[in-house]
Amino acid sequence: MDIFQIPGKTWWVRYSAVHGWGCSTGDGPLWFEERRIFMPLLPLLELGQHEAHQLVKEGVKRSQLPPAIAATFPLENLIVYALEWEVDSWPGEAIKWLESGFPLNRDIANALRRLSDDGRRGQRIRHRARALAKTWSEQVV
Image (cartoon, rainbow, N blue to C red; front, side, top):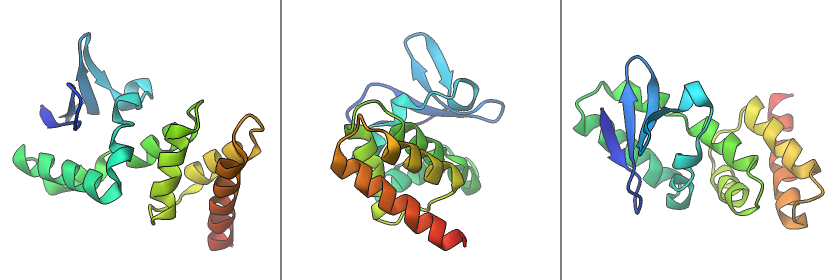
């Protein structure tokens, strides 16, 4: 079932009780959890977290699904996927979300540490990633 369209894109984000979240592609549905590919969701990072949350919640409501379904949307997976992207643009967008209060967890902190240790990355993004990973470590202790 189509839930919402990614703004400015031609594909729709879908939900299935069997497969979870995915999107429609020219080759058929792509189910995120099955393939561990979250690339079609990357443009959501450009919206900001409040707007992305609203898009998901409104789509779930419009589709007459239980509101709790919105909470299962894989935003944490999207953040980790973006932090591991080879070019600094998507990691930078993910870091903006984290700096504006998106909740950190162990998987995100580990991705931040890998990013901060990657000498191929720009110094500014490595430092921002290191600071966020340090914040999470201090919260856990």
